[in-house]
Image (cartoon, rainbow, N blue to C red; front, side, top):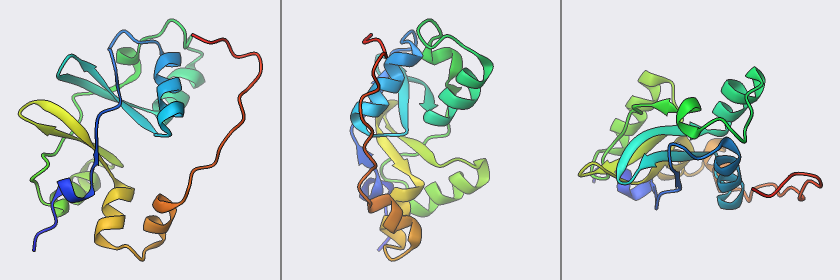
Length: 149
């Protein structure tokens, strides 16, 4: 039986508007305990914003996270898969494009995300990556002095 993206993906979409600040996007990532959010205008996917984008494209360049938009930093026109695509197709796309997560799109609408860890848990549940992906996340205390936005 062919393993499908829908068997591995995380359903549901954590998304921000293109004009959302980087602070808003980062807080959503923290609350949802995820490493990326989709940037969407209604049902239209604009891009993907990752925690690495926040660090490398924004913070390292001195961008003001309160005024810079998610759209300005996100990876536009992301590579996507459908829920009924083979999991092997997702793996191949990740390899070819050197990416770790793919938005899952159906009829032009984002349904969720499939990650390298999701695929490892599906295809090789005993692998180190699958173990790491199953592990409970580290928790961080609230940092005093950060403004609530």
